[in-house]
Amino acid sequence: MSTLGSFIWSIADQLRGPYRPNQYGNVILPFTILRRLDCILEPDRETVRDLAAKYENPNRLRIEVKKATGRPFYNTSKYSFANLLQDADGLEDNLVDYIDRFSADVDVFEYFDFKKEIIALEKAGLLREVVKSFAAVDLHPDVVSNADMGDAFEYIIRKFNEAANETSGDHYTPRDAIRLLVDLLFAEKNAALGEEGIVRSLYDPTAGTGGMLALAEEHLLKQNPDARLSLYGQEYNPQSYAICKSDLLAKGHDASNIAFGNTLTDDAFKDRKFDFCMSNPPYGVDWKQYAKAVTKERDEAGPYGRFAPGLPATSDGQMLFLLHLAHKMRAPEDGGGRAGIVMNGSPLFNGAAESGPSNIRKWLLENDLVDAIVALPTNMFFNTGIATYIWILDNTKHPDRKGLVQLIDGTSFWTKMRKNLGNKGREISNADRAKIVRLYADFADADLDFSKVLRIDEFGYWTITVERPLLNEDGKPVVDRKGNPKPDSKKRDTENVPFTYGGSAAGPAGKIEVIQAYFDTEVKPHVPDAWIDWTKVKVGYEIPFTRHFYKYAPPRPLAEIDADLEKQVTKILDLLREVER
Image (cartoon, rainbow, N blue to C red):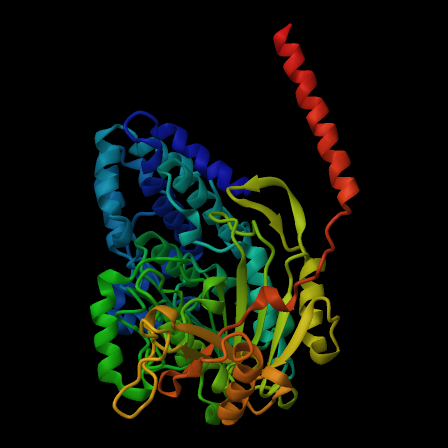
C-alpha cells in the first residue's frame, strides 16, 4: 500500500457529508496533481513572473522559461499554495486564477472539471481546509520520487473506483506485469540500447495513467543513463489522461505527445511510427458504438491500412489494438520496431477459419511479426483473475528467430501477495521475472517444460467440408444431371486439417496432398461414401497455447477412489445419525 496515497486519501475524510465516497476522487486527484506541479514550480516562481512581465507573446515566453528553468511548462499567477490562504475571502477566485495561469500545455484541470469542484467546495465550506491539508504535503520529486507518485496515484484511483464500484483495471496495469513486458520488449535490442546518446521513441495507445511509459523510461535510463526516450501516448478516460500528462510534465517531457481521445477512431499520431510500442487494452469490451467508423477506415485505407487484415467480433476490441500496434512499429528499412501487448486468451484461438480473428493471426504469422507469447499467472490483475498473455511483436527479428514463434509458459512463476488487491493475489517477483526473461533469451535452448519454439506453419490449418450423398427411399444416392451424387446437408461435416499433418513441413504449398492424406486416413475408413468439397476449403490460424504445454496426469487407481468414496459415505451417514438424535 502507498503510504503517501493513504495520507492523501485521508484528506477525503474532510469531504464526508457534502460528498459521497464515489465523488472523493473528483477532488483528491486534481488537488494532488496541482500540489505536485506547485512544488515543482516553487523554486523558479519569481523568475517566471519577471519573464512574464517582459514577454507578452506566449510562444516567446515559453522559450525563455525553458531557457531559464529547463521546464517546458510554467505558471504566471501571483498565487501558489504558499500564499493562497493569506486572502481568506478571495480563496475561491485566487485558486481559479492560479489554475487559469498555467501555460497552455497544462490543460489537465479541464478534464477534471476542476473549477466546478472548487465552487462546490467553497459552497460546502470545505475549500479552505482542503487547500490547507494539501499545502502541508511536500510533493516535490526530490521528496516523492516519480515511482512513489505513480504508486500513490494508483492507490487513490483504486480506492476511488472501489467506492464507485468501477473497474480499476481500466485505468492501470500492475507494475510487476509492466516490468516483465518492458524487460521482454527491450530484451532483443540490448546491444543498440547501450550506445551513448541514443534516442528512441516509445508509444502507448492505451496510456492510462502513464505507468507503462514511466516504467519503460525508468528501465532504459537504468540501463543507459545517456539514452533519451521520447514518450508518446493516447488515452480516452479524462482523469487517466490528466494524470498521465501531469506525470510527464513533472518529468520534463513534451506533454503535447500525450493526446486525449479514442485511438481506434482517431489515431492522434497517424503519420508517426515508433521504435517501441506497448499496450494493455481493455479485455472483452464492446466496440459496436464505433464499428461504423472503424469499418469505414478499413474500407478507405486500402491494403496497407491498420485494420486491413481483418476485424474481430464487435463484442471484443482487443485485436484492433493488436493490429494498431503492428501498424505503428517503425518500418524495417528505418531500423524496425518492437511491440508488446497484454491480452486475455481469446485472441489466441477465437473465430473459425477465415473469420476476422483468424485472418488477423494469419497476417501476423505469415508476415513473421509474432516473436513470442508468454502466459502470465492467473490472479495477476486488479479487476480479473482470468488467464492473460503478453504478445511480443518484432518486424526485424534476430536471424535465429526468423520464421519461428516462442511460446513461454510463465503461469507457475509467481509469488503470493501478503494481502490481495482486488482480484490480484499474486505478483511476479524480481526472481520470477528473471526466470521468464532467461527462458526468452535461451530461446531454442530453453527448458522445454516452460518454452516451445514452433515454426509458423505449425499454427495453420485448413477447414475442409466433408459431404455425404443424399439417399432416396431405396437407399441409393440421388444424382444431378451430370451423374454426380447430391450432398445431404444434414450429414455435412467439417474437419480441421493441420498444415503439418503427417509430419509435413510443406505448409500452405502442400495443401492438396496433405488434405487428401488426412481424408484418406482419418475420414474415409469411417464413411466410405464421403468426399471433400474442394470449393469450400478455408485457411485458418490458431495458437493452441495450452495444448502445447499439456502434461498428461494418469487418473488415480480405482481402489483409491473407492476408498475415498467409502470414507465420505461413512461421514455423511454419521452426520445423518446426529440429526436424527
